Image 1 (tube, rainbow, N blue to C red):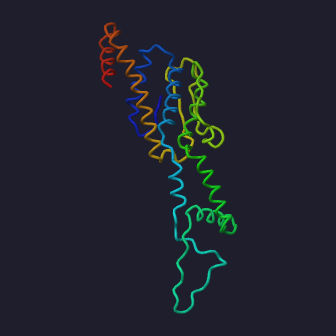
Image 2 (image 1 turned 180 degrees about the vertical axis):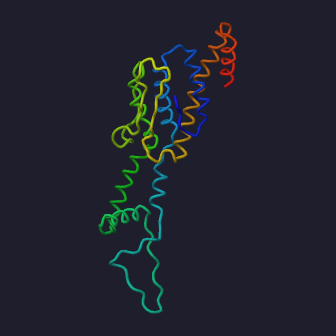
Image 3 (image 1 turned 135 degrees about the vertical axis):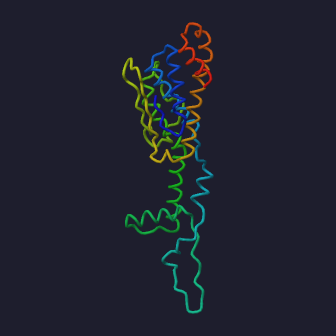
Length: 238
């Protein structure tokens, strides 16, 4: 099970290998199950943006927007030109994007409606970074026995279908099973909250497997040969 993240993946893979050896469980099913668990735990630990934060950032006043064309006047000789009107940052972004599409700018009540509309859609995407893990759990859960599904979670924050992609291990009896998952946001790898959530999820799964090994290894250690005993003791100290 390869982990591609700024994380001690060798340690995790070593714990996983030792766990599979002593648990006697299906390698394929166990790798898929751990991938499913990591995806759900990552989703729960990824911080969500809150409405007050969105409103504060997008309604912040900026003075880079000129006044409306109808009210713009040239300053007379000896008079100071009036400063530019402060408007919400969201209004500036709306007109900027309209200008890129060759459309004119919006002002007044029409602009206020557009700002509220954009805020509404931003609110719907508050949990996007968190929900972008759910696609992995959805894809991999079908290959876990008993079958596991993404339950008890709102899907409206995913803005459509589940985001993210999971590639479960489908081979039966694979000696080196591998399962992969891809976060649904292209910029997910650059978001500190997303990276930290995955580290916490991996650590949680590591602790779960170590808890089993600490309970299992002492019972079987007398039957192991010297090399296996050394390996078991090393695993216990991880």
